[in-house]
Amino acid sequence: MKSLYIFCMYFLFATVLVHQLVPIPNSFYVIASSFGLILFLCATLCINRGFMQIASIVALAAGHLLIFRYDLSFAEWHNCLTKGILMPLLFVVIPLISIPISNGGYLESMEHFVAERRNRCGQVFLSLAVIHLALTVALNIASIIIFQRLLDPLNLPRKYLARLHIAVYSSNMMFSPYDPALNMILLYQNVSYADYFLPALILVTAIVGLCLLFVLMDKKLLQDVYDALPEVTKPHSLRKLIELMTHVLTLIILAFLGSLLMPDTPTIFIVSGIIVIYSLVWIFLVGTFDDLKQGLRKYNKNFDDYIQFLPFLIALSFFGSAVSLTPIRDYIGEFLMYLNGMPLYFVGMSFMVFVAGLSFCGIHMIIPVTTLALTVSPETLNLTPVAFLALLMVSWVAGMTISPLIPFTVVTSSAMRVKATTLAYRWGLGQLLPWVLIAPMLIIAINYVTGPT
Image (cartoon, rainbow, N blue to C red):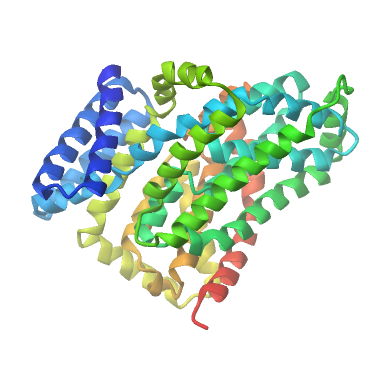
């Protein structure tokens, strides 16, 4: 089944690419995409176990139940099924960028850089957050494992690491043009990354600033960090760190410019092309052809990181799309009309509390966020499309912070060697409460800035 899963990844990649670039009959695309996605879901759901498998099956079953109950057409079923077909496109190319990062000598320089600043814990946190975010933009969730391995010799307090990982991955979800979930919401809301860029920067600054404030206010934690950091053993190469940040900044600028120059092209196509071309250039700059050959030999192993949550994304995208085609959408709209008379601040808070409450109980954020994205019109809430997108993303982060059963929590807790419930319910919950109070004010500001002039 694993071989079938890998085959389907490449098959779906080729299907989407051919459909985008070559004028083929629509019937061929319908057959190929349906066949590829059905095989992909069968293969991955046979391999997976636990919550992700059950949740994916439930989402698929519930979506089909709605389709049969409301007698939707085959074309509508296919539209629901292929709503998430662009996801594998990005996941196939993302591992390319890990090749130059692994062979460029950047990670060793980071470790020495931190050790030199053991007397300035706030600066250490901010520096780690910036470097970690750069890696996360490039490597997504795989960066947590890599970065934690680098930090393990420093023996930093688990609470400090939890603050760091939550700040970084929340920022990545909010900002990275290379994150599949953000791309999915951008696609659903028909908002370009260029339009969302500035609001995303505002939200990232707020997230990192809030986490930094928590660290600086905890005197015992600061002392524990100081005691844990080692004395400097050898000077670091600042050039390497600047080089890493320059590469990542270039990737972000290219994604911004691509979105600006090709507004009618889905962001996923733009960033996928950028990843392929830029990774090859980067490999040439930092390594040799042998690095590329070695990376390609074990390329398929990277797909193991996606085998659980990728079918989950597609299954829940199917369910959310099915909901949007049924009268349930109207019921949700009628319910949200009651929010229309409330101050915008409490509307934003209501969304965040709703998503966080479900996440606290173990329900993945993508279920409520996707449903809201596909069923709610921003105008209903007197929000601009960009402000509504920002509201969906801050709600996603609110849920992610305290959910014990999502890839971020599972991967991070495993890397930190703590329980997932400890990470979510103990450290995440304390960070969630001020975020729920602050984020709605930011949404109001974004709505004002992106509204009619």
